[in-house]
Length: 303
Ligand SMILES: *[C@@H]1O[C@H](CO)[C@@H](O)[C@H](O)[C@H]1NC(C)=O
Ligand SMILES: *[C@@H]1O[C@H](CO)[C@@H](O)[C@H](O)[C@H]1NC(C)=O
Ligand SMILES: *[C@@H]1O[C@H](CO)[C@@H](O)[C@H](O)[C@H]1NC(C)=O
Ligand SMILES: *[C@@H]1O[C@H](CO)[C@@H](O)[C@H](O)[C@H]1NC(C)=O
Ligand SMILES: *[C@@H]1O[C@H](CO)[C@@H](O)[C@H](O)[C@H]1NC(C)=O
Ligand SMILES: CC(=O)N[C@H]1CO[C@H](CO)[C@@H](O)[C@@H]1O
Image (cartoon, rainbow, N blue to C red; front, side, top):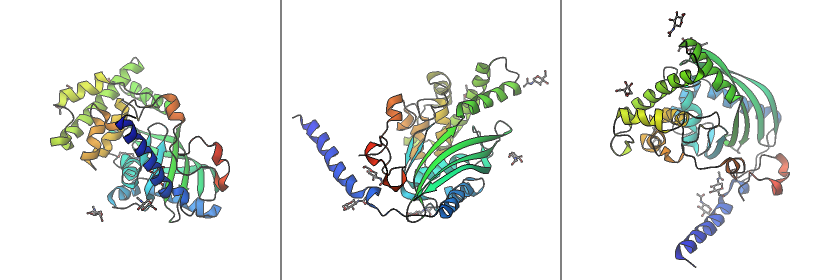
């Protein structure tokens, strides 16, 4: 057998053993009442609102996430660990003065809620103050959340409902504002604004070994000409919209996030998964089905 193949196989084998021993599957699963799960759910959304969300980004350890939280957002991708998730879930929506797609969350309404064991499924309509676009916009987020024995989130799965409609709404609003004659013209205007913002952030924070672009015009040309603007499901692919998402995080840890706004995409803004791979990804350690039902047929579970 080829030595590399042996090395690869032993890594897979060893990590398999290691994972089985350390997986959350082996940890005690808490049982919460419906009321407790409701309180945990509203506790999360209270922390999500601006300006409470700023506090989560400033603290050293999360009061919301477990240290090894696993999260997935359908329009972006998967995110592991407390620090990264605090930056994405809270830091992304915490600055009303910064150019962004949806701005800051200012209120919420839970419209659907079902909960069992340590798992809660909800639909939440969050009103965002989209300061860049000058509108208040309702955004519907479907979530599944699993809580650990310390009442912290250990897994979440979030879906932005009607997100394509939301993007079109923002583009149409822009078209009206700038008297554009086509949506392409409005998208070009938004691209220009986002690219300038990302390149400014790059100039300010991505210096030395974190530098991604030779200069401002290389950056601007790459973002506006070399990559796609991005469709509604492409905020974790090789697009401008993906780099706009990651631009907000650069200030927290330039060494981690600069590559995400650079040409390589740093493993986050990359076309690494096909449609089927995305839909069939075996990502979660714990089942989303309470009471241990159906684990043997669940294609999202890591084996
Ligand atoms: C999930 O499982 C993977 C591999 O099976 C392991 O590396 C990881 O530590 C586990 N994560 C949690 C939160 O248990
Ligand atoms: C966060 O905690 C770590 C480990 O305890 C420490 O090294 C670090 O300085 C702390 N950072 C802040 C901002 O408090
Ligand atoms: C939305 O943000 C703008 C700009 O920061 C602010 O003037 C306005 O009061 C905010 N609207 C609401 C409803 O919070
Ligand atoms: C759009 O058109 C209106 C009415 O013709 C005009 O008042 C406004 O200044 C125009 N806005 C821009 C950004 O060109
Ligand atoms: C960066 O380049 C773009 C496109 O040429 C330009 O519009 C923008 O003003 C430049 N920004 C800076 C800070 O030089
Ligand atoms: C990171 C971690 O928790 N590793 C542990 C995984 O499980 C083995 C065996 O139980 C421990 O030795 C590791 O410390």
